[in-house]
Length: 342
Length: 271
Ligand SMILES: Nc1ncnc2c1ncn2[C@@H]1O[C@H](COP(=O)(O)OP(=O)(O)O)[C@@H](O)[C@H]1O
Ligand SMILES: [Mg+2]
Image (cartoon, each protein chain N blue to C red):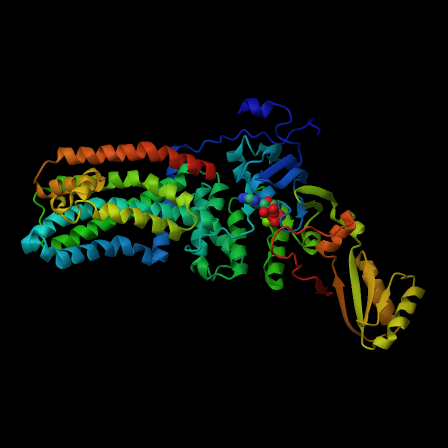
């Protein structure tokens, strides 16, 4: 053990919670991962964005010691995935793409079991289970078997399960895929809370919106390769940020609205008489406020406003010049492409 | 990559130790027992099978055997039934493992810092407890029907022990099935398919002397015959004990020697 520990370059770099170098994984002829490099800095959230079949789950499984890479090295919390799997497992918490709770056990028993497997005393395991049930709003359902839980409750139980041991690094594999918008927002709140408490998170997603909401840095992967990475703001600038859509009460006023905006220096508004919408690409809340301010100040009656986040396809189009290649069957539809402006 | 400063030294010991393993096995056994509680139908085989088999054979077929002497048939059949209890329940290890792999629960366990064997050991402990309960139910029911123990409690314990030892060797086969087949139902189906001819082509339910020659040569090598004969000798105090017991132990050792390494290798590969 000490031989490994003192050798250079075997623990990754200080300040990096996760470090991945040239990871390759083949399944038969499928190249699930084809030389992936990425880094998650301590205390930050890395979003791994990619369509179905991009290799996200494979990456998470390798970083959780569930499968071994064919080539490359990876360190989590300073531990080598291949050589120090046991120590590594003490460092991580995983919420997989598919819930891994025991359906026949109650929510409480699921969490208590994991506490005991993580070597907590009976009393501590009980206290931790109770605490997390409370925190994830599962106290009322604590005694019911997980079989009776809704999709959102299972997700929350799964999240709670991955947090029992207060892991330094959390993996969340598509944590909101298949959830309704309300439950998705609950999960987002919870993830933000974990991050505020100092967890390092590697989060995979198919939704630009989710990455934007939760991640500091973004790594975009496609067919097992990294096609872009950088700060979320940087990538957002590349793909054009959000679009504000304004629906006037009187569509006849559309050209007049665009003219007023133009006079005020907002020159990139477009109008579409077909849909009755005025669209303005925006990159920040100042711009949003400016547009609304101008239109309101001129006394236009506004029936509705929306902001639209670029879809995964638009992101891929901007980065690669071609749409995302979706390998799997399930389409990568955004759960909420449109979100009302608060 | 700069290596001026390294991440915190991973000095922690990676070994789990005996106390840790016992704690993990204990927690997982509790889980297996809670699963049984949540799904009481899974106890049907342990609780009802001994009762159904006893009633069915003693009262339905018993009258036609031993010239209609049901008491004699009870003394003949019930020890055989006791002998196979360990084995029938050992088969549940395979279905249990299969469903853990299917549902992703095993993935959760595999990301925890626990020994690989703990999950398996806890399944064996829980199934052994179930087998013991099943044996107790069978014996209670048998005594109520007038079954007589002709020897003593030590011999009775030995018979139960032998049943468990044989069952333990079947666990490995069950594990292999559990990890090779796609669904828990398939594991169940294949197990039954293998089990039925072995059960009925043995001396458990009927003396083999009335069977045709080709079947007799099968029943003679069938380890379940030796198991039933050994159990009968232990409970009824008639016939040779040492020989059938030895045969059962040899079969158990052989099955373990062949299938345990295969099953463990396969389990390690998946875990
Ligand atoms: N166990 C496996 N056996 C064979 N192919 C697999 C296996 N796991 C993943 N793959 C394939 O590897 C590719 C990447 O899969 P995955 O990592 O699940 O992608 P994602 O999570 O991004 O949707 C896909 O083409 C998938 O079909
Ligand atoms: Mg996936």
